[in-house]
Image 1: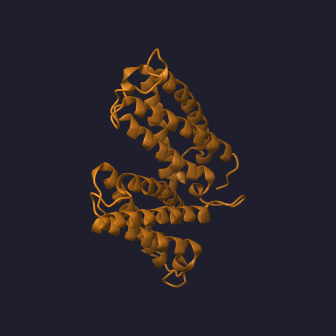
Image 2: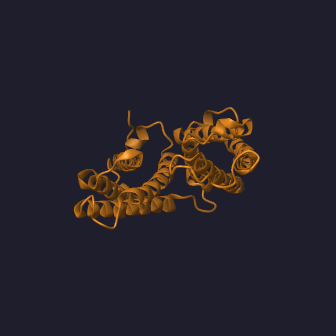
Image 3: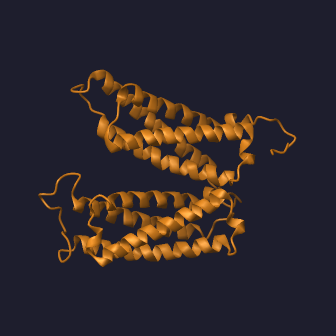
Length: 298
């Protein structure tokens, strides 16, 4: 049962505040983007399907957030609303910039042949609105981020936002792993996969507990446990950052150069390179997370 707070039933600030305006623009740009693609732009293969999923998913969740805040329905949900909106804004930023890069890369061309000028124009327009969609989500992250010395939701802090980025980067690593990366060739590379999996699972659990607001039910101090885990993740990723390149690119175990006969899109060396790069990216993210976690206030 929703209890009366003594205020108005509708929260107009959810639409008129800077964050509310950003969300309205997100809804508008998201709807425009997938409508252009569905109507005439077209999409195909896994890349196009991913882009359409990103735009429709972000649109649906944004509509849900606007509706809940405008009608105060979020008070009925068993969620930490501030953590939920901050986590989604960061996730939507990462997903939307990925789609904004992938769609024009694979579907936009300068000439009209063979798709026709009308289809080309629709795809260019969709790419423009996809870029604008990313800007609006990034704007929300900027507006809602924790300010220095401010007591706020964990997911709005730098450490909380980095958790979303770490999980997203881990998903990229997993995608490369399943793309014929030959990670099962050595026990050492299997250890790296275990590192990626363990850190991803724990990071998702930390985000889940924060979003659901269940951290107070834990029998151990959540904040200190997160810092200890982050330190452990730094050590684990450091080991992976050393082991993976050695067993993939050293001439004793792998190939320091890309094989000449490797087919584009189906080359294990390419997947191994992607994994190596994003291993270092995530290591840097965990180091930054550990540094910032010393300064956050909940």
